[in-house]
Amino acid sequence: MTNAEIKKYREILEAKQSELIFLLRNREGIEIEKSPDALDEVQRASERELAIRTLDRESSLLRNVRAALQRIDRGQFGVCMHCEEDISVKRMNAVPWTPYCIECQEQFDRKQLVPDESFDDMLVSV
Image (cartoon, rainbow, N blue to C red; front, side, top):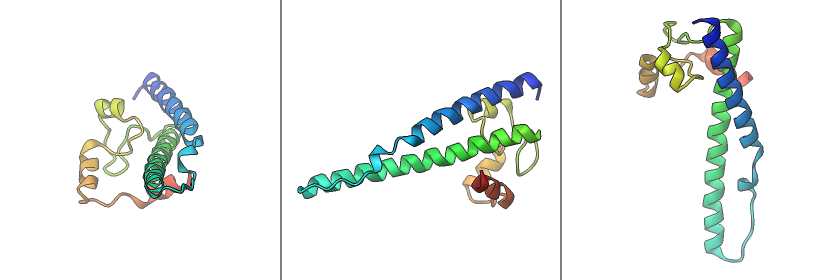
């Protein structure tokens, strides 16, 4: 991968990181509000659950983005964390924070492979 391509991906990842940090600061949807109407309580609980799931998904994505930025700094960006083959440009353009090539990702999704524990540890420590 050329320096220009890495610079382009770094800019994309940094912009995504800023966007996610901004979104994660908004936690209004998870506040608990009491209501005398039981139906309103159920509706608010459902909305709160959806907001919590969204925050969880965005937090996970932020960890992945930060891990990708760390891989750029270490010179490991664009290389699959499992098979150590280059990740296709098409996949990198679609999901620049991906740690895996499409083949390994599909195997992980089918639970045929167990993700590398050191990668999981790295995500947690970010």
